[in-house]
Length: 205
Image (tube, rainbow, N blue to C red):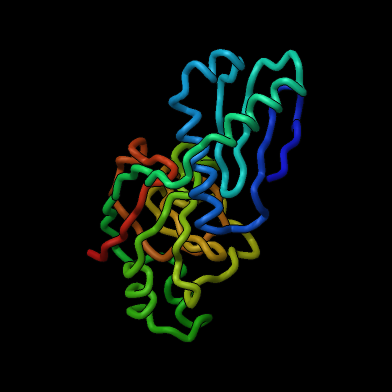
């Protein structure tokens, strides 16, 4: 594990540089274990914890950098990685009529039905939330339907759009600019219930 101070109020612990489910589960285990340790948070004046794919940022009022680093690393050292993370499964019904679906079909030499079948056959893991509030970055996409983001991002992608970008997929909780390839749309609107570590299953309607 690598650790460093991003600023005088932000300490980062990084376990890899990979987009890897196992690494993300370790980060989420640390995050959730420390998040409920109110005494530790209070004693070290930690006011925010931010998990990413493979790192965890501690935002705090830090008076002594060395003591803070020692305390955090010691706390991470006693995290029980054998515990199973609790998670919720979110079912999202999708109309696969996205503006990029036909173009993706040509690029990948797959029928739209094949793309839909591959997209709905997986259980996706919310690795992190970011970019926009409750925007889920999902791991688990079938490699055969991964493809780069658009060369020129769109100024507007509608709320509820289902997108593919690289080796990931997502659902847009808000309208926003984006270069993701849009394959469908959903009326799902319970985005505030998303948490890192939860699962998402897409269903065709």
